[in-house]
Image (cartoon, rainbow, N blue to C red; front, side, top):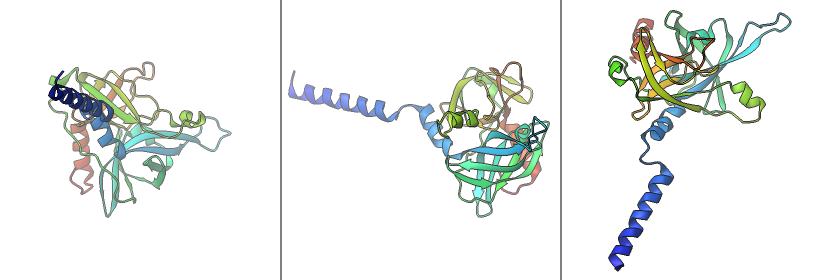
Length: 233
């Protein structure tokens, strides 16, 4: 083996090692890394299941879509916050801030919330109009599944990434082959290789949680325009 051949082989090995270690060629990893900072945990109090209790704790996911000197706006699923009070977000898995409901739509199952916290990372909304041609594409979901159970096990707070496929485009709903478990409703559903956010995660079938859904992002855009929030999503 000549000296030039040895040098070429060493260069190829180094290049391969650097690519594997940094996941530089993995678009899904890059998309999740880019979106993750804007995903937040919502914690709240809801009416108690047992009369002897004053309240129950409940959780959901959400994601920031705009941030400025006025604070930050975020999306979540409306059913997750219905009847709740003392709603707060946890961002960067450690900092907490209060939020209030700006607008909501029970039929679409979406809510716009606002926090006075400024300068939070935000996610740009994608589109869902042409997704009929994308059935079968890999999708991801970022959220906080059953965070209280993770906390009870001493596993700490962290955003989880779920993966699946876009299985069907239905009326006012995207069906995905990944479960939306308690705590994940309101998280962003996105195309794996591009990171384009196409929906807001929601659960619909209590008897079959393995079938997940998302509100199409074009429906979310219409809701935001009607809410007249003034931030031009």
